[in-house]
Length: 472
Image 1: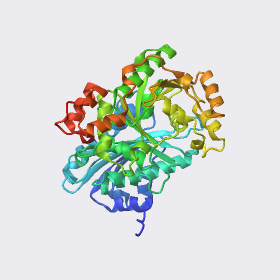
Image 2: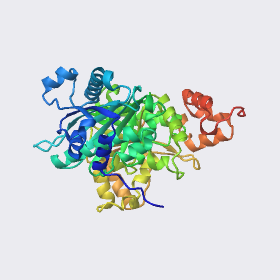
Image 3: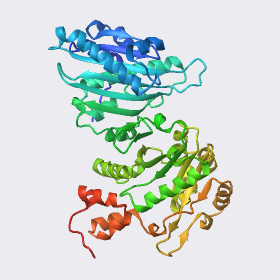
């Protein structure tokens, strides 16, 4: 099999310049006109660029695009796209409409400052017509720039901007390929895309939850989020300056245990922090290792799980951070407030499996150091041993020496804490048991999940559910 040859950034920009159907505006704020620069540099830009603008001064920017709470934000980007695209149509439609597909490219970013201590990120997007006189389509990205030098960040921003335009113009029939192409001539060590939102006529079939999943699967981002309505979320906007509570699970399906774990931990977390429960962000995490457990990614299965989590009203987090210390480090990028993980006793036991830390030079000690560096705690939900019938808690967990000593040290330091308020009737419930009962048409599964979950599974025939289940 021959390997596909990647088109260079210069070739992409030049191809767009030679395409006389494409004509539009570049509006860039924050790191120079790095995307427009490519089109001027390669030649032939007059057939592509109607206008290039950088409204750096805040007063000037407000006068053009309206006031915004923050200048590097999705709101500001959308105002820029709407304003510039509408101007193109207003000014140029009479002379070019029948042969021209108009577009507006915009970005608003904050690159490395001279002090070198700021968050380097930005929003960029394209609002465009796929064909002349077509309805509008749009793709918006949030990017994190990882280079340590301002010049390198500007370079990376220019490259991904060209990639974005090329993807919208020539790959819009294949959204997955569009996402994959964003890092052509770049690496994930230089730039990360943690949010992609498709909209408009060309992308009417795109489910942005699947796009979020693809970002993580393709390695463009370590994690992505969306809310119960399916709206894609930018992590910093949701997590900034707020305590975060995370439950990891298969949620196949969501059971009463899953719900009770989160509720019990939420009450305890709020009491420990002496804050209102509404200030805590709750995340139900689907890990890529779990989603790929059968080898291939099943999108229908993923969407079923996402729909069931949505029915509980929780935010879905998709992550590629199997190691909890990596997940904790990612959360720490966005908030300095306390973070809590809730897990059952078997998961706590797995934390102390030494071979899982073989990739760290300092082994399990380094892993625990990374995990508990920030204000992070673990709340432990009891586990009912189905064989012995014994309920295991923090004080009854036995590990092989010397892990037992490390475990006691962490417990005594308050990093691992027992949840005391929980629903005892939920303890015998196991997700895999619920799933098997659904497949076996054993109607008793409905008592093991919240009513709203049972209703959705039945109505949408998730996980192999079929009507006519036995009432025995």
